[in-house]
Image (cartoon, rainbow, N blue to C red; front, side, top):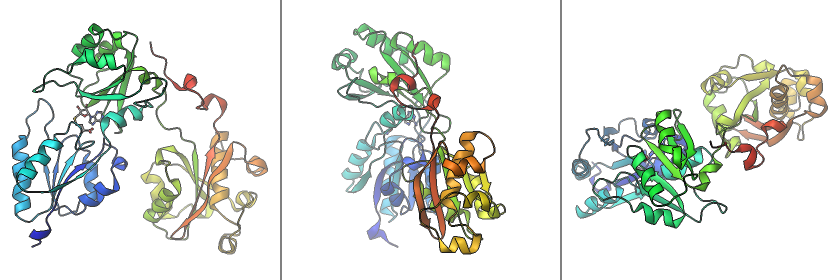
Length: 404
Ligand code: SAH
């Protein structure tokens, strides 16, 4: 039907977390008639594909049967020649150890021009997921991305890599980890060098292990870590956070009209969050007249977030910078979202029921991070709960996990 317009994309789906996909990737995916998916791709990203798209799984996880590379390209070509647009979805970045280069060459050889859309590669995302920067002025001048799976291309020159003194980020290194560690030690790398392995990074099932090089292979095998995992070797691994789970420090105040949908609230909260994530939210706060507001309750349930409701009196006790005539008319308060965000934060930091009096006096332990924002009739403000000293993420010394 639209043969002339059929297109091909090589798309990086990122490391797993759907939100780490690029806008360009989601937009291309939404145009594809056919989607060929690798097995490291989180199937959740298919939410961006058309409902009627043909989805083909062509996994090739090490050791398991898979569609041969030539077969994948042949399938792509068949669909393209039939006038269908084809998206080839790969984990991470399509050009980093993903055979994306080979597939692009094969397509080009057949006269097809494919667009390459970058993704966030696991070698950067996995270390970051536990607080490890792959470079850091104090630890490494650079980073080397290397495969630990030597099939076909011969063994990396580990001694040469040790000599660079750069961070080593190893893909596909789990099966041969003890050999790799032995080679690094033999090449003179210090047995005290910090190491990390991160399995299924940015996914709910993410796990990791930290150890010094000398004990690393044992530690990883005792922890039962396997593929897919990224191995990081070098001083930067000492920066891994002991608590890499995001701290729940945000209280989100929501004001909405009757019959506002969960989607509308979701959109407004997402917009107000900016670069913050839902994981950082500790509570949703609103006025108690919204106790039965279906959209609001559904939104909270969806994100497993508790809701804190405050009375008109509690809310009226918190001054609002720009009073809203509509809120005053309908609810008898000058504004809902900002006072509720602050009350919600005070509520959490008090660790028990809110005391309207203490919240009103100064709203201790809370400050407005995002002032009132409005999105399609939903108002949102965000207060941050000021961490008490024992939670304060100040220096590396208090944050980094002690290595054995
Ligand atoms: N193109 C991909 C890499 C493909 S090679 C990218 O840019 O990320 C496959 C290897 O990537 C796995 O063996 C593992 O080492 C790594 N990998 C991919 N996704 C991962 C994840 N979520 N967590 C840890 N490692 C991952």
